[in-house]
Image (cartoon, rainbow, N blue to C red; front, side):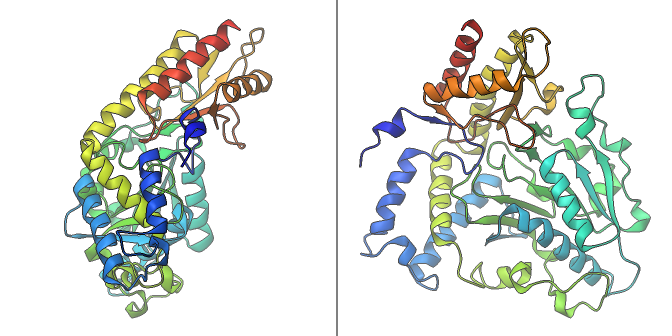
Length: 403
């Protein structure tokens, strides 16, 4: 199989993102003949012992990487992170109602808005349920160096007396380049943190740094950013919060579609319906590779080194580049977003940005254009990227300045 063109191309797309070539080569063989069974992995029965071994190995490796305790279930689902905007809300409401024996008023659910994806989650919650509370909107602070990011103690959190059913946040905003500092949510008021289920969307930074699973009720992530190909969404959920919603007598949340019910997935080992076999297989290969490369701690070190190169270059040339996240501690190490400025006005220039994108394309560095909703430049440096790739980006930035 010829990989020459691939070897010369640096793919910095935000998702679906690049995958390591060695994993793709192994997966290509698996498509033809998985484990010398004589049949391809996508032809396996999901009820077979062969696939059972495959999915169990993937789960065990993920548990090892994230230190997931046995009190948490790992679910391999479909529908992407967007479907989890609905599923997390509905399942946490069901868990809350079960705990209250169906008594009491509809509980509030709290949402932290930090960018595009958290806002989408908030809007979906409002479409399905009331009361939904926006406890803070950080979007106006992100690009303004004079506006600090408020601490959780300053947020408009629901009162413990209101017995909120959950708090949702997006750990890394893929479009906006905003990432919460590690353990930022440990700064929530102690009683709130202990009593309110915390839900984290980690779709674009999972496995790039450690996360304290035990301090969360749910952690979910789509595979296509930092795990594997699109098609599988992984949910890590505390088992005591998984209930049968049809057994809960409460009218304040709608009936949950069966494929969104966590209990159905958990009780059937993620085989309630036919799973996404190939994405699970490739994700499993990625988990094993990451273990062999030193795990999440080493991945974090590599991510810090890669992103530092690019951010340092931005800071060195403030009249040419401007990071879209003004607060350095909140800049994503996965999705590095910035604007290119007009030399005369000092304002973002779509013309200059288009020229930079074209220059990168000509030098085989592709998919660096910012999301259509915000513009600018986006350099995505997921786990599969290398320090050499970041160095090439920095070299092109320097050449672009001198051109």
